[in-house]
Length: 468
Image (cartoon, rainbow, N blue to C red; front, side):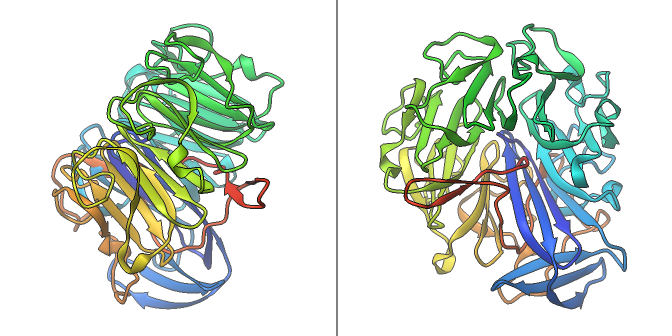
C-alpha cells in the first residue's frame, strides 16, 4: 500500500533490465531499476542527459547527470511533511530530481503515508525522510526530516526489501529476518505489544522461519515465507488479516488460502490481496467500496478467490485506499473498487465491485502497476509511464492538479516520438503545496523470483517494495 507522494528512480548506466514499482496508500509510488549493457544514443538536455537504449527489443531510458554515473531519484506530489525530500514542504507538480541522494546508488524507494524510505545498492544503507511521528523514520526519535538521512540502526545489516504502512515500516534482511518499527497501536509491528518502536526491532515470531516478502496496510502487516506460507498481524477489524474474525493480532499468525502456496501479496488501506503460486487471485478484508472484487460490497474474513479473473494468470497486484489493481501475465490490467477520482482508469467515476479491464493507447500491454491513495501509475510495453486518478497535489506528474479517469502519459518520461522530454530540476519545477513520489522510464522488467504454476506460467515475486 502506498500514499500521496510519487518517487522515480533511474539507473544511469546501460540497460535497464528490471524495474520494481510500488505505491503507498496515500499518493506515493516506488521504482527500482537494474541495468545491463546496451547500445545507446545520448540526447543533451540543459539539466542532464537522457540515453535511449535498445536491448532485447525493448527501449530503455536512463539518465546521466553530467559525466557521473549512479542512480537518479525523482519525486513529485504532496510534500507538506517533507516526504519529497527536497528540504521544504512544498508540493511538486512535475518530477523533480532528489539531489540529496546523488551518488548514493539508490535501487529502490518505498512510500508511506507521510514518509519515504530508500535503499542503496546491496541494501547496505537505508535512508528515511518525512514526518517522524510515532518513530516511523527509525532514527530513535520523533523528529521530522526534510531530506534523506541514513538509518544508523540498520547499518551492518543488508536489507532486501522494505514496506511502509501508514505510520509503520517493515523490512526483510538478506538473512530472511523481519524487522519492524514505528506506530504499533494495533500490534502491526508483530512484537507482541502495542508500544511504538522508535528503532527497528526483530520480529521474533519469524526466528527460524525464512521470510521473502512483506507488505503493509494502514495498521496491519503481512508476510510470505520462503515456503510460500502467508502470515498476518496487526489491526483486524474488517477481516483484513484473513484469520476468520475481526480481532487484532499482536503476533504473526498463519493464514490459509485454499491450501495453496502464496507467491505475491499486497495491502490496501484495510484490505489484502494475494496471488497463489498457480496465479489465482484472492482478496479479503474491507469491502465497502467493492475493492475486494467479488461483485458485492461485503467484507471477507478469510481469503476468497476473485472468480471473475479465474481464467487469468495474475503476475502483479497493488492496493490503494479503497481500490485494487491486478496485472495478468498477458499484459492486461484490471481495476476495481472506489472510483470517485477515476483511479480505476476506465473512463468514468463509478465504483466497480468486479474487475474491469483498463485500456491504454495503441492497445499497449502493461509491465508494471502501482496504486497510490487515490491514484494509480503504470508502465507499458513501450516503456511509457501513465498516471490517472486524483491529481490535486500534482501526484499525477503532469504539471496540473486535475483528476484523470483514463491513463494519461507522463510526458517527462515519454518515448513516443518525443526524445527531448526531461525531468524537471528542483529550480524549474513548480510547486503547489503537497507531495508525491513516482515512477520512471523505459525498461524491460525482470522478476526477482518466479513461481511457476501447473500450466507453466510464471508470476513475478518482487524482491523490493513498489505505487503511490
